[in-house]
Every structure is written in C-alpha cells, then in structure tokens.
Image (cartoon, rainbow, N blue to C red):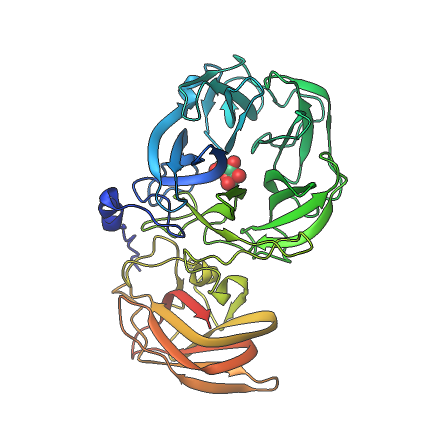
Length: 456
Ligand code: FUB
C-alpha cells in the first residue's frame, strides 16, 4: 500500500501579502505568528509575537525571532518587522519562544523572552531593552535573568509575564510543565528581588501565564491542559483572581476554550475601552501546530468581575462543537488518526493529509465515527470533509447522520459525498450527547475523513 503526503499550496498566504488583516482574522497571513503579548502605548496597540517557521510537515517549533505589530484600531495590524532575534543574545542558541514587553519606570521598554541557552540547562528567560516600543532592542543583562540554576525555578523556564502594580512594584510570573513561578523584579527591570515563590490556588496550570489588574483585582490567565477543558494534547485558557499580586489565587474557570492548535497562549488587554483576548490558533491557510497565527476577539466581564468565555470568531472553532467532543469509531487504521477529524483544520482538497486523517482501510461496507459530549449539545449543522487517497480510500457511496435520543440512534438525514469541500447539512435543532456519521463505502474501497465539524 502506498501513501502519499499531500503538500499544501499556501496560495492564500501569498495573497495575504497585500490584504489588511481584520479583527478576528489572523493579524497577518504573511508569516505564521504565535505566543502574543500586548501593550498599549498612547493611541497604539502593540502585539509582540513569536514567529513560526516550521515547514508544512514539520513536527517541531522552528522559531528564531520575534515580531512587533502595531494597530490603532485593533483591526488592521502593521508588521514593524523582526525587532528581536536569538542572535541578539550572545549566550542563547535556539527557540525564540513566548515573550512579553513591559515599560519600566525609566520609560524604556523591556522585552522578556524565552530562549534556549548555549550552556548547560534548557530554557531561560532573558531580557532586552529599547527606548521605544519597537526598539531597537539590545540584551539588557548579557546572560539569563532566570535559568535552571535559579533557586526554585520552574521545570521549564519559559513564558514570562511581567506586571507593574500601581505602587510601582514589578512582578514576573512564568513557567511550564505545571510549574508556575513568581518573583519580584527590582525597579531596574533586570534583576530579581527576594525569593522565587510558587503561587498557590492556580488550578491546572500548564504554561503561558498572563497577568493584569482590573478594578483592584489581580487576574492570572494561563494555559491548562486538563481533561475538564481540553482533549488530550490540547489546552484551554483558565484564569484565577487574587487580591494580592502574589496570591493566593482563586480559580474562576475557563475563559478561552481549546483552539485549533495544540498550544494555547493568552494576552488580555483593554484598548480604547474594549477588552480583548489575543491568542493564537492554527486557522490560517496552511497553518498547524507549528505554524500558528495570532488573532484576537472581544472579551467581556460580568458585573461581578468574572470573565465571560470568549467567542472565537476566527478559525471556526468556538462554534465547532467537535472540539469539545470525544471521538470514537467502529474502525481506524493503525497509521491514521481519528482525532484529526476534530482539529479545526480547513483542508485544501480531499487529498490533503497535512494535519492527519481518519481512514478505515481495509474495511468495506458501513463504518461509523461518533462524537460524544458529557452534556447534551444543541446541534443543527454538520459538515464532513472526506478523505480520498486515490488508492484504497475513496469517497463514500453514501452517508447517514444520526443522533442518540437516549436509548437508540435516530436518522437525521443523508450527508453529501462531494470531494474537495465541506459537505454541510443543516437540520432542525436537536439536543443530544452523541452524534454519529455512518459512512458506506463504494465497492472495493474503504472510507476516510479529514475533518468533521458540528455546530448550531
Ligand atoms: O511557542 C513555543 C511555546 O509554545 C510557548 O513558549 C508556549 O507558550 C507554547 O505556546
């Protein structure tokens, strides 16, 4: 059996060169961006992003520099270029991971970054400084601010978030691998004050903290990858609040559901009277877990100060109930991936296996794929994108959508079986915990699916 890898043609990526980005779309389609941090200076919203350079088949981060984007309307963003790179840190070698910029009391801008050092140890936090939000930036210390040799450092010293309180005291939170850490910074922004502490009450912390203050309450948003909010390998954004900048914290819930990339990374900011959640996903043309794109959506607070869950208007993820479902099937070939059907990806053709596919070769006849949710979901739309490898897997001859009524499966209707597109079917809203696609193969072939979205 031969298997071909379909290479993506990033045509839209090229088209994006001349198109202004709109809010809720990626801030750019010119490059892939990740790990946003946000800063408002005067009339301008600045986003500081990582830069994903992995190939379409790459399975690791390739990140060498950070970009600055500016906007005066939170809708159209201008790339100010790669204003900082690993090469700016003589002691660092790889991995320009998540970063954040904070203005110091001296009026200068301090860019805290996650980088891989050249010496012993793994990731470190370095800091560069510049006289304006766009730099130029230079290494402020000549070595790491935090490294594996820092007492009580995180198991993975990445993802700094730096916050200045009203009294001028500066705090830095950071960490990954469930190891959240915090420390005070001196007014010079380049040295720590006192011991590194392990904040308490931040439930299910995984990585990517973002700290801010609103109406006297401290907020800490962060990526969590527990099964209560994300399927294995993915992450949601939870948050906690506190009345003291070092906690203890009280967990408040999920503010951003899973996104279409495995990693999730929040920045929350108020700009011109509107709050925003800035984050990344894999929704840009040709995107993926290592080719992410920064986007933003409006964020709203309740009267009691809690945050409403952000409606993801880009990437088609929030309305895609598949993301929060558990998938099962009557059969999946050992080399294929059932969960690929629910990664929020938009295929370029029925031969596109760049994000993985579901396939049931060499079974024939009727096979099924099912989504289950812990609680009943309102559903009125289903869209299947079929896989056809021009070999043992072909488009289905027919397909039937069914829902579980509590005791048996009930037919909803026939799904389309057209190649190279989402076969969308709409129907009167049902409420169910299970939805099932029964796929019947053409004679002599098996069936496969790249993506199956479900919504209202
Ligand atoms: O981009 C590399 C790493 O992935 C970041 O540091 C994490 O927050 C995650 O987004």
